[in-house]
Amino acid sequence: MALVLALSGLCISYEWLMDGVGAVANGGRSIAPENAMPKVDTLLTARPTRPVADVAYAYMRQQSPQAEMLLIGPTTNAAEPVWATAYGKSLHYYHRDEYRFHPRTGQLLLEQPHASKSPGKKLADMNYDLHTGLILGLGGKIIAFIISLIAASLPVTGFLVWRGRHKSKKPQQRMVVAA
Image 1 (cartoon, rainbow, N blue to C red):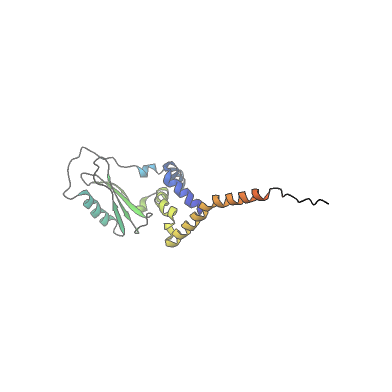
Image 2 (cartoon, rainbow, N blue to C red; image 1 turned 30 degrees about the vertical axis):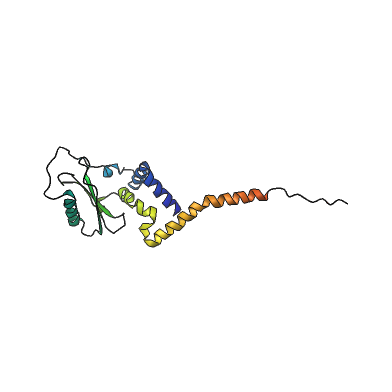
């Protein structure tokens, strides 16, 4: 379990490692095409009748009616797509449907339902829940905390054991009784 926590933390920190783990889970195929952001045509100036966030919300409600939590990204940058994510369970980041919308028109640019994702992409989505123990619920979070606490204390206890061994190896002075 400590190894899973450590590796998932490294995958959060290093994108190249997550790409490698995803490729292994995909049987050698990279997950980079699934992570590619769609291009935004910045020449489009048409505005929808409703704000882009409302368009995204309505579309996600229609496509992912089972979702307990919806998250819509910033809608202010005209050069990047508006990201929207529908999570199957509230505060669990694994089972999610992802959408990207044009920031000006509200047109759907990308749709990635959870069912159509590759095993590598699903593993990448699961990474945070694995790292925090959330994948197993509250009990998993408690177990992850205890394992992290033990792993963090290992260098300290190792030093104390090493120091104790070196202290006990000093030759003891013998008292010589003069007659």
